[in-house]
Image (cartoon, rainbow, N blue to C red):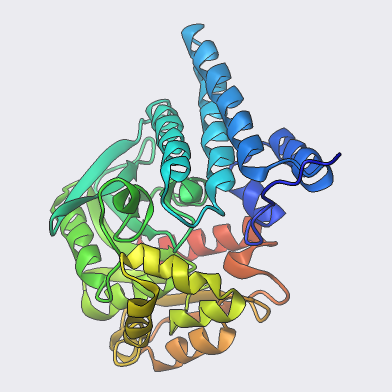
Length: 354
């Protein structure tokens, strides 16, 4: 008899899993075991992650650092897609997320150069992140602040960040309020005026003598957060949105469960969330954006509408602005990641190098 378990989350498209670092054999295994045979998605992903993590540890003891690095990456990637559909921050969610952190930290230590862990004080908690530095670069070099969305956090964006690092830019990859470890372990909740937290990140970049010009990029809901920063902080010299939004409440049209998910991110009740949604808008802010602006979107994005980012684009005062539409693609350029991620990286380095 088929074991009916939890299923693959709808937003975990195949291309998203693979572009986020899931090993192609792990991908085939979950396809077979979960989608075809009906095993529990979360349990299978955790089992595969545990195997990858143990194998990486064994190889590291043999001084096979490149192999260990690969399998630590594979471990965190399959753990990440496993816990993705768990809305409540319960013991299971936290147990698997701790494994994401542990395996990613091992991966980061084996990079060349090793990633640098970052904690930035904000209010009564700390925001967590990583500095990813280019190799053989002349300092000071451009730096990009990379912000994830409402459910895919900093670990998922590492391969996209690597595209920028390969082009001579440093990347500060952060979990801000309401994101990843900042939320789950530091109790830093999402807030309406999220740009205040991001300005603290820019403060850190400005004071670091290794860096010159500062850019910012956000994906999904991060593509709503970063234009808020660009609208108020003139230190930002280029801004990129990958499937952003003008009014993120529209995500509830795609799946009503996101009303509760955002309540969890904000640390409020579902009823209180109703009062916050109208305040989450770029109205009165988009018109203050003056730095170079790139909006990447699709006309068939089911989560955030093209109409919303078109309004952002139209209202922004940037003299150098572009809206790049990939027809027929999914959210966050899913289905054309290889091209879109490199396009964004080339665009931003062209604006930041001086």
